[in-house]
Image 1 (tube, rainbow, N blue to C red):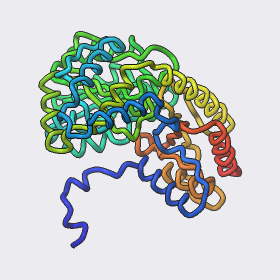
Image 2 (tube, rainbow, N blue to C red; image 1 turned 30 degrees about the horizontal axis):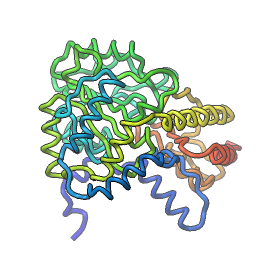
Image 3 (cartoon, one colour; image 1 turned 60 degrees about the horizontal axis):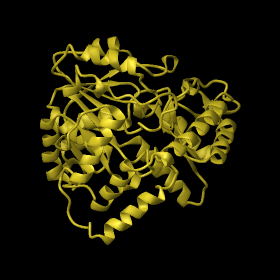
Image 4 (cartoon, rainbow, N blue to C red; image 1 turned 135 degrees about the horizontal axis):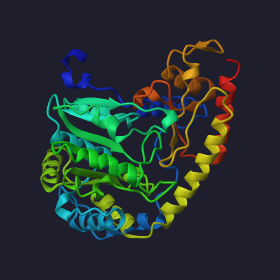
Length: 398
């Protein structure tokens, strides 16, 4: 028995490089080395106490049984209100499906809509799992490139240029992981106007970083009536409320898509965790003050990281407008030899920084940009300063 016995689909897609680098960092740390982990997209803040207390209360009240596949009704009602009040989106409770994280939600949507050979337009850079999820569904990702000079932001005409008779979906995030790019209302309006001409294309909007926005009010593409009946809005509690381990995500979608996602989920995981759902209900139904404080801290860290990146002579970086990542261009170092180590790719560079500087980052190859590196600043300012001191030393003398 060996790997040849595995199903063909296992070879269709790659392992998540974010998880791969986090694993390597843990292995190095287990050997006694202090590693500063800038590879994972996980807030270093604790879940607010009032949310934790609500989970304890849920256990005491007996919410320890199986849950409805689509989620508790009171949670779906609260999500429906949240969509209306915060995003100007009209999703009834029966158009909402609660899943085991936003990643699970996106996979449900892709499996519900994509047939073999269907094309999905994906702006570059993209979250590492988008392309692999599409491949897992036997779809074809069609990438639309951008660069640091244009703030990693594509325009409606760029997306329209790649539309074909096989195009089934447009999948994007705003604020974006990994670039921190945020689409304004006017920019989204232009994209919506363009897609209004193509009634067979569905728009999937990943808004998991909604509340980590440094420049303006968050805007949802589903607010535009010309395409509202084809928009699937993805969100969750992981980033905004420091609830990554609680694993609660959700979608608002046309009813037939919501029902399809519920059907698929019913055969994979059934309903999401009962206690986590009650905690999520508290998170989205109570004050956003803890979230706003966290966002302010991320803004301070972003400013620090941009300052420190400016000290690296050959690195190009934009100023992210949201999320908690920077995505600088390290292309200068590709093909160079640094302190005896040949750097053939940014993946090599990330391993070099891990082994020499003991700082964990993620290669931009995983996000569709081979010259870039994703750096998460979801850690303290002291750790960030220490990390950049080490990176600066490791890259010196090139």
